[in-house]
Image (cartoon, rainbow, N blue to C red):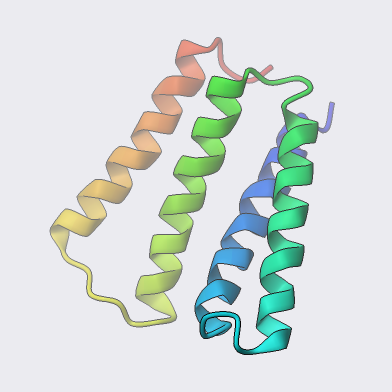
Length: 109
């Protein structure tokens, strides 16, 4: 019942952990480093809960694809990383690919 909620929490936790990874300065700052460990811990735990109901191919594709796209957007918005038309095309392809995989696996379960 909460399958997609668990998957959403896993995605958000992974994105937060990845953001803390940049801020941790190579794990030299303890508070952001703790955020990395907690974020990835929550991400993997909630992903494992989502995998109780979802096929691995679908859950991992959504988790990795949406997480990658959101992390890239955070890089652009917060860290002012370079972006161009190719960047946004790539993000659209990632999101489009996860949508296609969702439909290929019978949609929402």
